[in-house]
Image 1: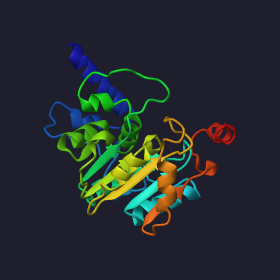
Image 2: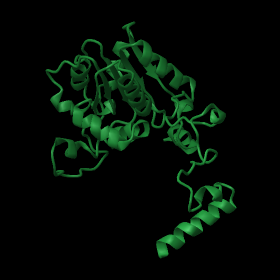
Image 3: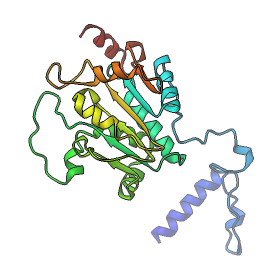
Length: 258
């Protein structure tokens, strides 16, 4: 009885709001017409409605535009700049774009497992579980371009791979889009090893801030590597600046004085 009353009240409300025709819901009616003017319709009459769900990737500064162009035109790109300039986000977004377009067969994400000034001890779980806290920024960028369910499915299929820097030696990364994040926490030897992993039909983007290394002074090799590779015409070295910071305006102010 309560269910019947609920249906009747809902029907009265729809009739009152002019959504449905009560004559179509009489006892003798055999066929009930679906309402044709409620909600979204795929017909051309509603084509003026915004139907895009994927964020459009647009540069917000000249430096970001230079970085996007460098990724499109070079197979090896180094993006150096302060925090908040979008280095990691743009690199991961271009990786997802290349994977969705079929330009590459997989995405390889790598990041050094270096704590920011404090030790968090031993972490439980498998290799992916241990690296999860360090790779959280990459997961955040991935989830902004793809749903977490799709990210999990792509990782299960091996199309998105988490590759620790310590296990990269000896590999050849063919048909892949490689993103090396926080490269300022890599030594010169590590970066040399990572850069030489580049294989056929692959793109590698190395991001980092040489002034924000968590290693001992003089140990980071990012600045030296970038300086030497600038002499190679086929390699793009993009240096972002404070005016390219897209986080809170206070971030740019702090970078200038800290």
